[in-house]
Image (cartoon, rainbow over the protein chains, first blue to last red):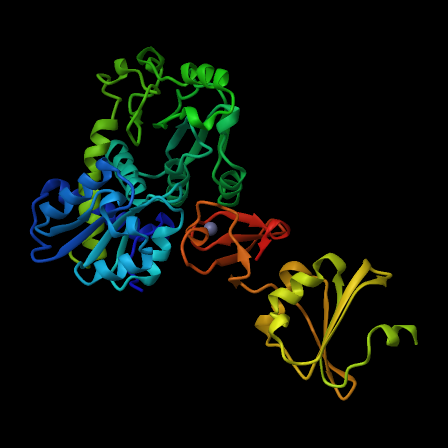
Length: 302
Length: 151
Ligand SMILES: [Zn+2]
């Protein structure tokens, strides 16, 4: 097993997180550094995720490395019944590191155990997606100038949304205050509230979006998915209540920035896009620099 | 006298007593006693003042490693384990849950890699506010000790 793998955000200490963010800032200043000349990175996408794959592949190419791999399971040997173990061993004969997305929870941890080369988890089922969390942190740091003592509102699907769970874990190093805004069906699970209590992180819970974020520094929106609801009437109601509209931002703090892991559906009205507080498109661009930093760290390249 | 008729005395080996009756065959299974060549006496649904109906297992000429007996702590934490030599109890072994549990527990998450590929299960044992929780090493889902599904 390779110890350099990145499976879960909790694999990184506070110092390692900060080092990644520093490194990402250097890549933002100078994205084309050919430190991976001659290195081969595999991107194995057992389920399609064009956004994440293009971001990782661009990161590698801008560092001068080359890409091999596949973009969905139908074109890979796993569709012929090959085990993940066998695919990883085969690919590690060719590649110096593997970026992997897989539909099964825990696939990345397992791959990291059996792989002779480092694994970068680009999403394993509904479990972990650490590069998303690191780019969220980078966006927060960039817009606020600090990660310390911020008030962060998490909105939408707090029950199944893995990005918000990972964000709580990662922010726990930096003395945050959280506000959880979610309908009853999609409330923050107890284990994360217990985690906050154990780490002395203050939080409040409310179930309406309107006017509940006027003290916030970050408004982190997530997608409310129809398939999470047993009662479709309830979904229709929630969908409308949880749409952020431009007029709702009138009394928000000047430094407030709105983040969203994208793609959005209707939780942010397009009339917010032109507001200077809307940051979600630039957030996605930050992903490139953060992934350059991650690939470099995993391959011990500065 | 009646007791001795039900479960014969053991010269050398291991006695596992005070197993809740409904957990007896789980204990048999996790210790792989079906593959054990030594003489085994199994009693179940015996009257117990402490726990109502209990089970007892006596295995001749065999002493289990601590890591093996600790698996019992998962399903029958109050079972008593005595090591016998020449009819005398030479060791009363305390049960303690291991930090890591391999193979015997099945992950409750149907989308977990361990339920879909030939991957052995692995759980971390954590105590959360006095409650014992098993956390899947792979999918990171948590389950309470009493809800854990034993393979
Ligand atoms: Zn699992």
